[in-house]
Image (cartoon, rainbow, N blue to C red; front, side):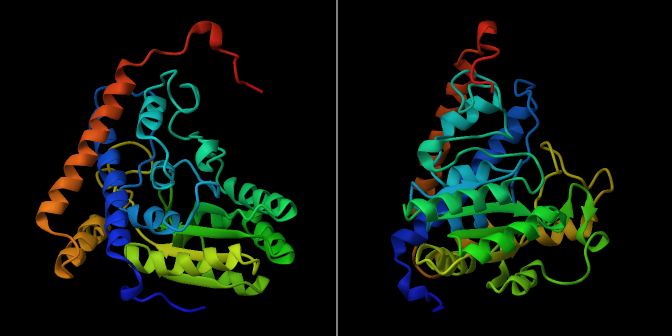
Length: 327
């Protein structure tokens, strides 16, 4: 598979990657700020620090392609094109939310943008992506499915079962492991031997690629190859991206104060902020001017303002709707 060079990525694409990453970061930051107001009642699992993976992967997906995500799904859904108002209203439990205010942060859905629904079951999204890919292959609709999951999901048997089945049937699916080294507060070193998750792909005869998940260009390049491979009928790929979540497993605080993670480790990863590193890169290459950066920031801030205001002023579901859309 041929690697994409800097010259082959148009400036407009480079700027769009930045805009998507910044949208995810600012939306999550705003969620942190609003959560303290006690109007959001559902748990929130934030992806601050992991924005490059969602942006780099989803940049290659068509609207009709599928993504299947986890409890930490805001970034994936935003990168796939989901409306911010729909997400914000769901966090506020309002009837205008994507799940009518009944699903909350962990159960976002937007079938129109190829998001059938996210699941909080660890590893649960992996066989769903394989199943959707099987359906696509049988129907010949040309769609690609992507499963986003964490290193903790790699402990689940269904992960290996899905790799096996997808390889056997040469399914158009890409498995994306966001390895942030912690399953809740359990470090990867306490759960798995010192072998890269991507290396497990070799046992099933499919490519396994490991890359820096904080480098959006690296993510963009590797995801381009994997998705093209799936779309061309060559079967699945396992992508492992190392990254780090800045916030606690759940909620707007960090795990540092509680002693769940070393402060030094947290500080080192914050120095490798994917948004700031990419912003500096674009400025140094003359792709993004200070004026353009300010304009993009202002546009996104306005969108988030409108989304949060829409959510707060939207009605709650009516009591009579309790059992509507429940199967």
